[in-house]
Amino acid sequence: MFLTIKKIPKVSWSSKKPLNLKPKITTFIFLCFGLSLFGVGEGLLLVSQTGASPWSVLAQGISLHVDYSIGTITFFTSLFVIFLWIFLNQKPGIGTILNAIIIAVMIDVCLKYIQAPDHIIAKFLLALFAVIIVGIGSGFYLIANLGPGPRDGLMTGLQNKTKLPIALVRAFLEISVVSIGWYLGGTVGFGTLMFAFGVGPAVALGLYVVGKNF
Image (cartoon, rainbow, N blue to C red; front, top):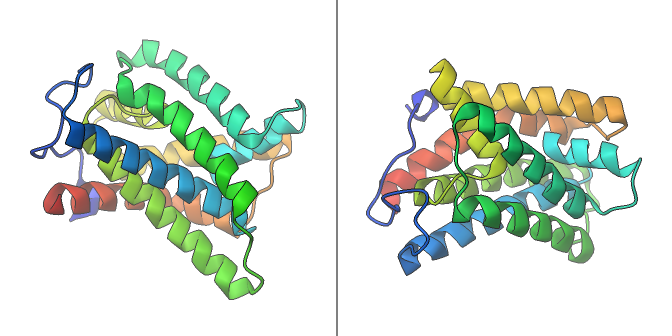
């Protein structure tokens, strides 16, 4: 069952080491594809107008106090999270840096070029689709093994320390972050709750699907 996954799967195109500076072209392509999916998922959730993802709620909250876009704030938040890796014995790789850049860019691109659907049902379906896309994207770039993204490095680092299932650790992180974002003034809605409780299982599903089929 994918919900019980505790380790990141390895496949033929996975990098043998996360600090590989010259990965195979297929590994690099899957990495960028996964990161783009993740960023699009984050952006689509914002576009759905049902509430932002927990980390975007945090970015929204901060944006109320500084004059920067949500994507830009997301980038600087990622840098701060990478700093926290010091306490979890995590090391950044190519994927870590590209994660901070690509996801931030894709969020701003979605907000600029994609319009929100008019019907409420369509909004909820878009939010659900966004969460699933984030999970599948996570599966691709985590399995690429070129260094997890800032948030996923925090997730896997905590999982290594606690030995708890990935789905549970990720859910705990998202719920904690959305609480801080809401306190700062970020918008919380149904889509936020869907992401907070659904992204853990979605990431686990992404790892299962990508690990078995790619």
